[in-house]
Image (cartoon, rainbow, N blue to C red; front, side, top):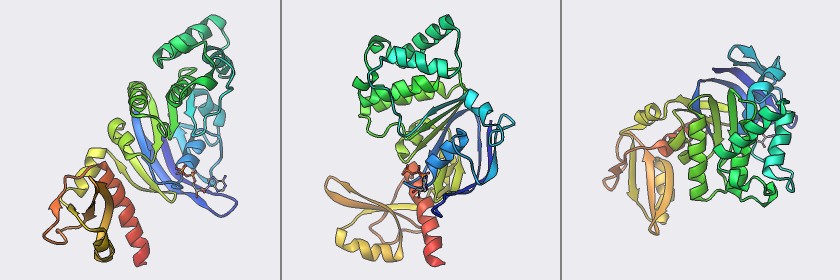
Length: 295
Ligand SMILES: Nc1ncnc2c1ncn2[C@@H]1O[C@H](COP(=O)(O)OP(=O)(O)OP(=O)(O)O)[C@@H](O)[C@H]1O
């Protein structure tokens, strides 16, 4: 169990990246959803003990990881947003090298662990190939293989599916959900679909603050009956925005469709919309923006 209490971080340039973040994260896949600049990577790096917060506490199974960063590094697997590799080394050799760095010193045990991880991530057939020649999806799977070295209790993956084609993304999802059956996996992303498909618990982060957290189905139930949609001409959008909380607008077969958050349909052309996680995400952002503009 990972318990984060009142975590705050302001960078030297004055940007408040984390502002009193409090979260409880148990075994399974936890989705941390937020728009660009929300503070996700800062939070991930802080949990991974790669940077210190200004204040607050992070406990992993009772151990304070801000005070004892080595304790978390020993039990942590981390796939950062920018995952650099030595391009010319084969996958097998690089994984072996990384296993040594992770403290797996026994040669036979290391060889076995490396082979197992290459099989698990479906890279065994290409283990002799240079990692630099891998496709984006293969590279991300290699990233997961290195994160799993040393049998971690906590895995952090930061924006892992950006740039993957649908097939690779699906394969990556299956791999993550299999891992999430046994340990804590935190998935940080701005892709709502990733969280919907994978996570049994989630939080939305915005401007360094947790807007909401819980089970996706519970959060969806909270906006149920308050989402309406209609087709609209683009010219009418500004007027609608003036008196409604427009959650999103999107093109369907070349026509603009809007969804709004309201207790009643704004006009007779609106029909009820069965909410999904995207509505939860946009509603949380819309509500906080509304608070700011009415201040
Ligand atoms: N080292 C740094 N120095 C100064 N400001 C920073 C630093 N790192 C991040 N920031 C700022 O802190 C805020 C949060 O950034 P962070 O990268 O944690 O967000 P994020 O949710 O991961 O965003 P993205 O999805 O775009 O990666 C942003 O405004 C960012 O510009």
